[in-house]
Length: 325
Image (cartoon, rainbow, N blue to C red; front, side, top):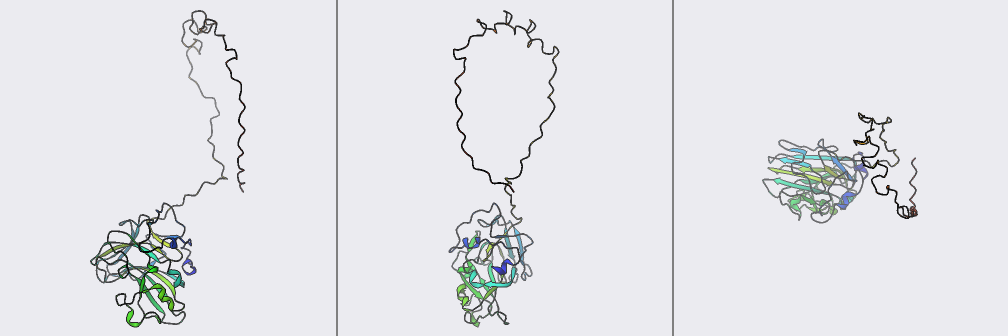
């Protein structure tokens, strides 16, 4: 998606589509290293910015609730102690992307630790422009789990395929949303595909929101998927460990060049290993010439004690290594 990729912070890899299924997605693989198609959002929240967080609302990257499967050890925590509090962040693109691209890709994971209303969860929102360069075409589309047929059980991570669910609009949109349908709780929820009836509708921003009316809600969000990337909130960015360069010369340890010193013996080694007769007979009574054997130690087997030499096997051919530039 050209618009969202314009910041340079996004990595286009297509992993977001692979995460989309029906209901809660299948468990995702752990993330031991950077994943292609993922943008890691650190505690400074870049490339997101504040979207009107007010009063007691708090948004921060923390490992307090861990993360969903495949989402590392941290997530974006959203806290709204009072009914008028708000905690929200947004990423706005420059020119917008077609809404149709968000239908198979828009998704996010959410967790609820506590809430005055136990069915409430953070929402995913899309800022859209439905009339091009003309004025008055702004609206915000909102996906809330409570208005969709998905689980809202607390104390566990859920992965919501928002692009395949129902969304409401804050403004009337010709041919899609009437003036009396601009609330999510007023029969205004429609599939995202229904908004394509507004020709040329584009997405100009993606919002992670926990708005007013959510007193006591302490929740978290992670793995927010868009057509071009998946946002993974982490305390630190995974480290890339490069493969060793096959063309790099291995280092060789330096060996000593001087002869090693040996401890001197008082008799300079002439005592035959400590035998009383001066060391010439190696400690045998007959003068040491027979080597301690009755026949002088000279008897050998008929073949000299050696087997016939065997031919060495032919070495197997090895592939030629690629040349190093």
